[in-house]
Structures are given as structure tokens and as C-alpha cells.
Amino acid sequence: MKKKVLIFSTRLPYPPTAGFKKRILKFSEFLSNMEFQVDLSFLHSDSLNNQLIKKVRKLYDNIFPFYLTNFQKIFGMSKAVFKNEPLQSHLYYSDRIARKLSEIISKNHYNLILWNHIRAHEYRKYIFNDFAIHLIDYHDSLAYHYLSGNNKISNFLWKSIYKIEGKRLLKYEKKILNNYKMAFITSVVDKYFIEPDGNKIKIIPMGVSQSLLGMKNDESDEDIITFIGKMDYLPNVDAVVYFTKEILPEINHDVKLYIIGTNPNKAVLNLQKKYSNVFVTGYIENPYELMAKSKIVIAPIRTGAGIQNKILEGMALGKPVVTFKERIKPFENIKNFQDIFAVDSSEEFAKAINSLLKNKTLRLEIGKNARNYIKENYTWKKIENKFRNYIYEVIE
Image (cartoon, rainbow, N blue to C red):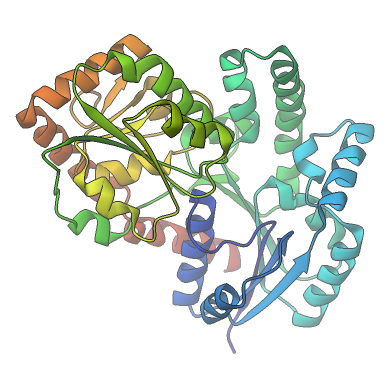
């Protein structure tokens, strides 16, 4: 008889338009390859697209969706305030859903339950007297994201919120670790921020598919620069707004900036109204075809944690990636100015882009090194082997 695993996510991990979705789907695939029965439970606040659900059902043995209203999210956050706990911890929690989820777990006798993100932990607290082994995937440290990004925020109110929330998150991230047999996270930086001593948190980085490594580096004659990301996510919005205002005017070439990604918010859409050389694509089914035509992939992320998927994908496509030094800390053994261009300031960012645009030989050399670095360190196949070993460790 197959062993059973339940994967619980506070959001539907499909389509794979964000790093956390790709990660959940890959872990699901790995577990299925290990001959587990893989079930998925997730929360949603919008009506479910029937075509989308049909595709999700093909990936799992059983799915258990739960509807969470926006009012319940607000109510959850208000409870967190009174409990002196981070807002993130109660954002997706509902007593009603917890009771139903507990019934499903009791009925199905799971061997493993993988809770995705600390936002799922309040549901874990509700589950007891079961025989499952509980694992959590932090993805990255939200506390690190809030506390390290605090100095980049100019708005006093948001700066205060980030500081308070960051401190509460760090306390929470450390505390909840005791409830799990093992935990996963994307980088060594995030791991040691939560667990400076001990070895319960295991590093499972993000990866790239083999198809990206095989794509032709088909750069256009035009000076195209691309940015990819979920475009209602604050660090991505901040990145493109900052780049367009502070760096783009300093580039000495007739460049076109393509901002690729789902759900562009008003601030992002306004950029293409204000700048004639900025194009906001929204969702593209295959964004990598456009990225393959670009000469440079940018990642001017000023806040955030973990391994940036956009950097991995740009490098896998054989593109020179320009980013800030803080963003390459999670990458092990990466060589700056050989595998990637990581800089300290907006002036250096513009200078790096200008150098790369005028020197095709340098672009191709950095791109080749970047692709080789990803092949050696960040393919999903290599990551799958590491993940399998950790799963066998907890179940045997």
C-alpha cells in the first residue's frame, strides 16, 4: 500500500506563476515519483476556474479546497494584533476550516503532512492525536525579509509596521520549529537567521527546469532588458519603479524594458504610460521566449529573502543578470563579475548595464558562465535527489 502525504497550502499553487507555486508543484512531483499518494489541500478567496481545477486534479490523487473570505482574513489579522503575534501568522486562519481539515486528516491517516509556509502553522496547531510526521517548508524567512528591507522604506508608517512585524515574525519562526520533525528553506542565509544553531532546518533551494538550460540564447538586435516577477508583489513593484526612475535614465543606449508577470498593479501599469520605452506585458504563457530575446535580465530587488527565481531563470537562459549584492548572498560559490553582475548602488547598476550592452563578447561570456553555474548547482533533478534523501530520513 502506498504511503500517503497531504500538502497544505494557504493558496492554490497553480498556475506556476510565482516561486512558491513552482516549489509546491515540484515537491508534489518528487513525492509522487517516490510512490506516495499525494493529496493537496488549499485555501482560496476567489471563485475557482473549472479548467484550472481540472488541471490541478490531474496532478494530485485528491484535492480539498477551502473557501476563505476576505472578511475572515481581516478578522484573523485582528486576532494576531491582540495576541501580540505577527499579522502573517493569522492572515489565512479560520476555525471553521481548521475543524474540517482536522476531519480530513483523521479520516485519511496520512503518513506525512507538509505544511507550506509559516502562514499554514496555525492549522498545524489544531491537528493533534494524529500519527503523521509533520514537516514545514518555510520557503524563506519572512522575518529576514521584513527586517533587512526596513531601511529601504521611506514611508514612516510602513517602516514602523515592517519593524514591528519583523520582530514578531522572527520570534514566531523560531518558536514554531519545535512542532515539526524537519523543516525546509531555500538558502543558508535564511536558515541561520531562524536557526543559527541546530540542524532541523534543511536547505532545499529553488531550481530550474532542464528546458530553460536547453533554450537558445536568441538575443534581439534591439537593446532589450527584461524583468520577470509577480507584479502585485511589493518587492517586485518597488524594484521596477526604482529601476525606472533611478537607473533607466542613466543607461546610454536606446533600451526597451519589458516587465513580465501576472497581476501588474497600478504603479506598474503607470510606468508604461509615463515612459515610452517601458512595456508591461502582464501574464504570458511562455515568458522565456521574450527573455531569450533580451540582452540583459535585471533583478533590482531591494527587499526580500531567499533565492530569487528571476535570477535563477535569467542565468539558466544564458543571460547576464544584473542585481544587488544582497541578492546573491544565498547563492553558494557564485563568482561575482564572472557568473553574475552584483553591485552596491544605482550608479554601479547603470554602469554595469552600459558595459554589457556595448560589449557582446562580455555578455556572451557572463551568460555562458551563468548557465554553467546553474547546471552545476540548481537543476531540479539535483534538488530532487536531496529532497528524497531528507524524506527517507524522516520516514525510516
